[in-house]
Length: 387
Image (cartoon, rainbow, N blue to C red):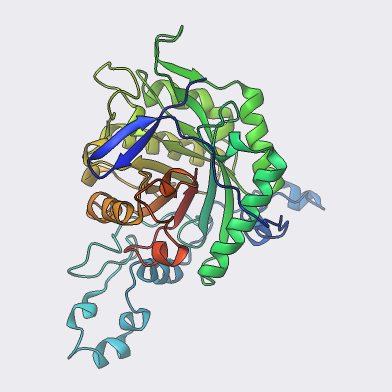
């Protein structure tokens, strides 16, 4: 299967097949990395021990700790937490008057006057993953060694590397627990016409089941990544509904391979707009309500302005947390510039960043971004993806 990925250079993005990856030495599988998070998905799962307990339904939606939610948003934006308390605000009035206007309400999250981040949105329902945890995902497709980590190594090696990487992020930011995730490309755009007429290959259930089993083994998340080609989200996403009804299965959509003009995927950069993202969020929200699930995470990839048109009109919902993931590759300065100029200026709710084990090292790059560099970005990405 041909898997096309982009090359980001100083003159712009180009496409070529991504070669193999740099192995991580000394990775140790830490089976307990995500045990704390696993409880989110076990609520209401214990068997009843009495008739009364069996008849009772678990409370849903769960309550959200809005104070902690706001505190974590401010931390991601690198805004001193003390400035939001009345006493601290009065004390800082002569030197940092802007921080006096840090506000939130019963229904919307915290914002600070004069700053884009944190971006005030509707609160999620209780049981939300973000910003209480940082997600660390390994990406790819089992059929292709060129598309990411998942096709590069056997499952046991992938899980060992993922556990080691997840633990390293937890150590880099001890205030934010980490959750491992498998991000499997379930609908893969193709560079030539396909029998379905959509220029895509839909992965068989046994391959998705394999990815789900890996996520379950580490008490983690499964992200199903969708490249719609010449199809659309309304057609492709419902085909994955039996998986999206599960409490630990999330969704990612990739505008790069959404070819609204009918061109072949990989020959130019595709695009999605607010209607695509809002339809997807509303679809997920209904699944959450109908199945009494924790809020879903929706990842939207982006590394050019036109990949996501109408970003200001994307609406996060109480049932769906939206992450815009900067997934271009290149040297450190190029990646920081893309994040700063493309993702951060158009806030939606949360941000993410993709790191490439091989492509980020291509000359003139001198190395991948360090965890310290990533965490210093404003806002600090709460979702980290590795390819």
